[in-house]
Image 1 (cartoon, rainbow, N blue to C red):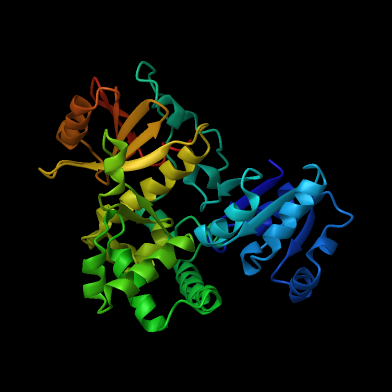
Image 2: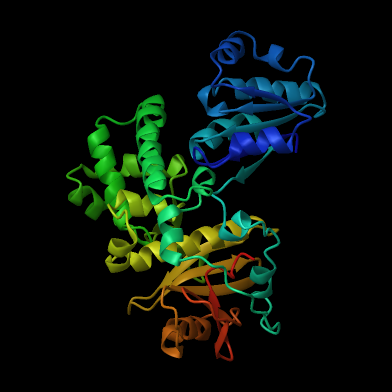
Length: 388
């Protein structure tokens, strides 16, 4: 494809990645007001003598997309563009009309734990799709899970040692996000109400989204709460996992689960800033599930075709945290923060596999360090092992 569209939250590393990995491209950013003014007056002049062009923060000028389409078509697809932006669907809605059939879309997520440790193969995850394969254990890293959850996986915090520095960064991140991105999108009447809604969602990460309850708890109208939630999702702060059904049409009508893409951000917004209070929190399981979601999401993104993430829940309240679907293969996954999972933790996985024969193995991702075979069809793996 002549155009690649890269989206991701602010500070996730889009600009750094583009500058370092695509040195042969001419780099432009619409954060530069001179470039922005030139793009408004004569966008074709930005790439007149260039065949490979990066346009960063492209969502700031939706009018540029028809000009890119024209440049691609006139050059017989010889010109190549990489567009990036911190708004996801907001950017893509503008792009898809102009660049249908000319663009592919990539989400850049926070770093995975394995990535931050220099491991990018994902061999362990791939082995889970082969039930006859016996996965291999590994030496656990010398890290504390609670400390990792408090720090999170945004690139700027990975080298920070002092917890205070992480807290200051997260506080500045939230304020910058509110003051810059939301004012640009001009869809927020009250920043105070909006922050209250973000805090309400943070306490619900890893749970089924009930927008009526969120609106009630935040003292907002249902319409306003819906618009604010959508705006947070468009800005790549949260993501949804739809319900899994054998019938695809049913997946559309059930409420999704909601996840923050970085567990530390949800923990910070919930008011937990130290290890002791986080360990005692009633939402700890949801934060751990959010950490597992980030790993699974990143690993699913690089499969071809991309694997989709769902959750499963019955009318009798049986629930499986994640159902991964890759082509005709299905992999159910439970997230349990316990360090010592047992067969009782696998009862819902076994129930799911009985109802869905295409799933030949179930996985429990736990907070310990041991690789355990709990059942002939159930494997328990450590959280840090997953993306190695």
